Length: 183
Image (cartoon, rainbow, N blue to C red; front, side):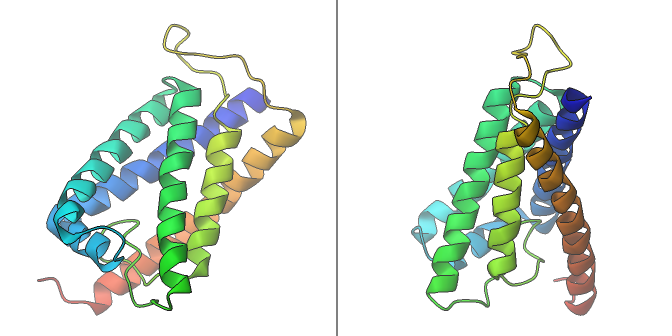
């Protein structure tokens, strides 16, 4: 039962990456690059390369997580990617810069805040906790479930929190999209 639930959490994280990548593609890679540039942690020239790379990585992680391909690699890579996002947001919040769009689901997202860092920390915990969930494909990097009962429960709780945050983020995205005219 734990393995099925952990695989469900992993699949949920995969769908979040898919929605995130699609939002960035629909919003325009150049718009996402402009959001990255506003974080002021890399030179402007790298923003476009990073934007395209993040989208490709999110799409790859989405497929790997959703289909259960190489669960440990996918789970830990997802955690690492989200940790970078959390760090960049935290750096800007500590700088006092709160008027930067999150960019999580494309360029038309709400401004950053500590809630974004918290959401990312929950997603990191869920990604790590579900990294050992068995794969649906035995020959594709499957592993035995090695998470303890506590670890599994923690990953499941994080998965539920992610659902709440995704719903709230999508509601915010819809609200922001209605307020801002499309260019």
